[in-house]
Length: 132
Image 1 (cartoon, rainbow, N blue to C red):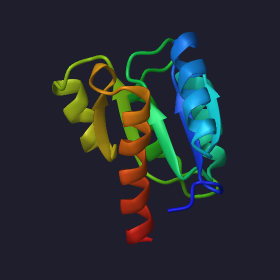
Image 2 (image 1 turned 45 degrees about the vertical axis):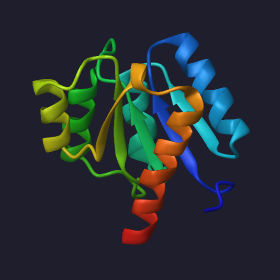
Image 3 (image 1 turned 135 degrees about the vertical axis):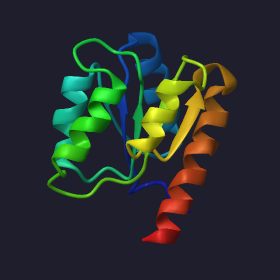
């Protein structure tokens, strides 16, 4: 799959993680944008056009669950691809709620080295491409 025209939005409040993920995904050939809280992420996601959104659950201003609820309430101007929850919170009731609200998957940050995360994202992008 060609990555050059694929765009990803990362909504993550941790500066170090935002920088690291920006580096690895741009190096892998993706157009990569970030938002540092749920409100900023919601504004970008509502513009739409992202092939995939990586969403942290625990953030200031608007958490991941709130983000997913807001996205359900108002459709983006251009469709987005799948939303993947990327969190340090173990798979629990919050993760289940995220899936019920439309998240396509749940990835535990601690389970993935940066290169492995790129590979995992590529699997979701391939699935989304096949269903389009």
